[in-house]
Image (tube, rainbow, N blue to C red; front, side, top):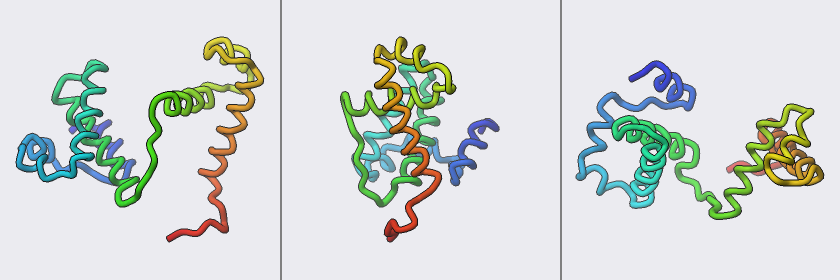
Length: 142
């Protein structure tokens, strides 16, 4: 396993066993997975293949992504938006990440929005970032 992939997996709090990819190729194993997990693996692998990865690299990266999702969301029900909602959420996150404090007009032009909308998006993203860093003290945790 490459050092960068090993480091990424370690950063996520898990490691993929050395023989995991060989085991994953076995149809007996994949047919025992919940269908949604198998579908997720195939969708992610397909996205990496369309992005230019060869089959083995795409499968390895998809496995890491699914393991990360399972590690983070495993056992919980979560909503995954689709269509315009996911496009808008990803756009807003990209605007937040690319904002450097002085490029609102540039972002507005690039994303074909007005500056007022960019400022609103930044305010929403700032609130989300703050909530991630400072969890609610009164939030119930089970």
